[in-house]
Length: 250
Length: 250
Image (cartoon, rainbow over all chains, first blue to last red; front, side, top):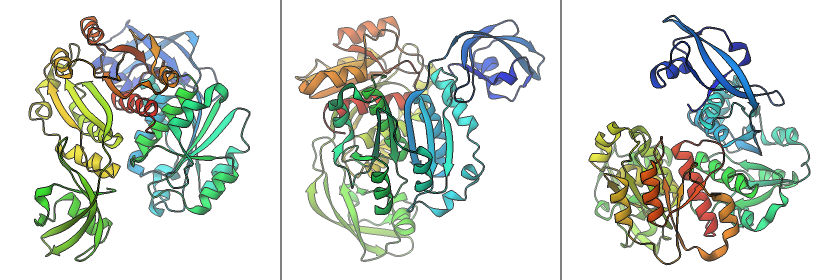
């Protein structure tokens, strides 16, 4: 945890000792009443998310309350959107945490034609309860902003949600079979024209021809990440990193 | 598991039903006697590692034996070496698996000045038993080759092991404090001169000034991965990916 991330409504409110932030402040940072630490306020897209200083105002053995003094607005998230086929439910929290730490602005999760049907029935997708891994990613990155996450019943719904590409927006589906180029090589040659990326990564068994056609019709190009097979988490981190490099951000 | 990876000594030898490869072949691939599947033989650096076809020769409910017909030599690992400060022991297997899947050729693990002293006492570093995550990374990538892994008591020993840079070898330490450039931006501008990379990633608390000086003396430049703090796994994947892009391999 590199930043204490608070919701605006949590300022001044006693948080229970079981709260992982309270545990971290007490046990790792070893802070008590009157001590200060770097903190930020999180919010939805478009809302202010100031960085500043929190102070431990009270600790009674059962709960801890913080005050917060804002200092500056936090840097924006990266202009990168990721469209991802439902991963294994056990991997979702880790993937969302990692993508948040990398600064991805928007994540669209979609059931895919070849995806395990049972994944779509998992409570993690049905209940859309992603708040915790997003906050953990923000705490890791040192920036309180969290991405928007949407869940779609299929690729078509996700593509409809994306709409038409914005100005300077590049769309790339990472798929070894329809790839016309290597994503990293392409990016190195592309120069500074791109201003935003939308990336599509399939689920374990990839996309069907029907889905690849739909991606093509939605202005996605097709690229590979080389001739080694990466698991979803690694492929997402690699594709996002190469996009950030093309944008001059890493 | 995208490839059945066997040790040469395992050909024709009954493997117990508890072996994760036997479990995978039976339960996920649903193969039995006479069925074939893509396979590869693993070996040490410099040894042949053929890709080919395995056949289930026997299954008696307790053990399964495979034959193997080699077809072609597997592609070489990537010319990327990673020098990594001891991570949390609980993360080591995952990091080694990921780095193997990305094709890293050599991994040097070293205790660092600021690293938790308890990490160095962990059996995972003392016993150097990394075979399983390396094989899992090879199974994921579809290439039976595994990196060399060495464990060093401190950075100086690891740097001595590295020796002088080879021709076309670039050395970069990822460090936000001494960074002179962004690693991704640098790579995009560097062109095709580099033929190999050695990357250094610190442990959670980073490097001391003494260690940074030692890295500089060993021909490491200093670069950052942007202004967000990434956990070790994500930073390693990002730095390796950018190196592979510079080499035209992703």
